Image (cartoon, rainbow, N blue to C red; front, side, top):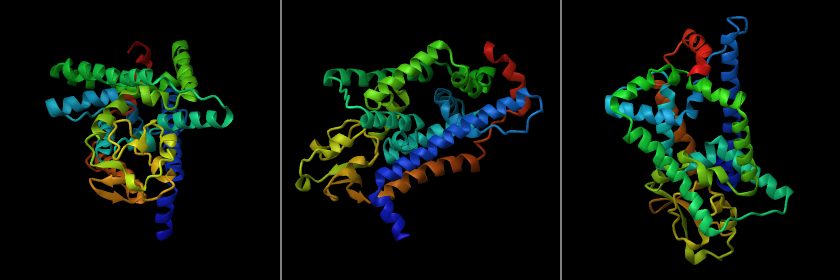
Amino acid sequence: MSALLTFLNTKVILVRNLVQIVFLGWSLYLGWRLSAFVAYLNSRGQLPVVERPTGVDAYLPIGALVSLKNWLVNGQFDRLHPAALVLFLTFVAMAFLTRKAFCSWICPVGAISEALYRCQERLSAIRLRLWPWLDRLLRGVKYLLLVFFVKLIVLDLPAASLSSFLQSPYWAISDIKMLHFFTAPTLTTIVVIGVLLVLSLFIRMFWCRYLCPYGALLGLVSWLSPNKISRRENSCISCHQCDKVCPASLNVSSCSTITSVECTACLSCVQTCPRPTTLSMTFIHYRLPNWVFILLVLLVFSCGVGAGMVSGHWQSSLSDMDYARLIPLLQRL
């Protein structure tokens, strides 16, 4: 056990990369299972039975926001995609307890963005860094997108319309529509994704830093978190290694406490620091060993999913027959 704790404590970046790979692989597996589920339904029983993977509800955050308002206003927990709300609440809880660790440890988009930039760093000498004023301007875009969705759903959508939406065929089959967005993309979709991939190669964490409204929401929640990266100024040697490895491009070396909503709690700065006691994750004023924080990230995620399963708010009430009836209507919804 001590060897494992030592490994977790000293190999944070490696551990985080392994966790990212696991969740990215799991996400790809869920997508494959959903595709196999649709193929099974379309075959009318000719292919082996495949159950719908509930975890794909994680990719329905906008619908989850509608579900949250409906639960709070009307007292109704969505039955069609209950896991969407469970996972949404889990990620918000993670933001409060572990800052934006969801973005740096679990989110597959974050993992792909990091991998693309690291590949470009190793294969090319090109380094692009936006002017500070432009960087600050673009960082506001994701908050504008968040405001748009909050206004559209939280403020403008009448309480009476919430149940109607959550019982509609569109919401029922939204997971299949999401699948088709990737398996049958339009030319516009291909161009947009291609542009984002190219930009992510040369501008570190482009999507996460400038465009992701989900990350913007989690960042605002994380500002309230009791956990923060702290720096002991008296032991800092001003080598600026922490600044260089920070995926969010924060000036860690100039702060006593990292309060920025952009911090993703990746702990890269903590491991990279040549003075082991200078940087650390702290709970209020108590220093947390790296292994404690890593286990906390995984524990909060596991407890959120487990609570949804145990409470009966995980599996969809839609049957295979419901999906078989709705899939032919996909293009019209």
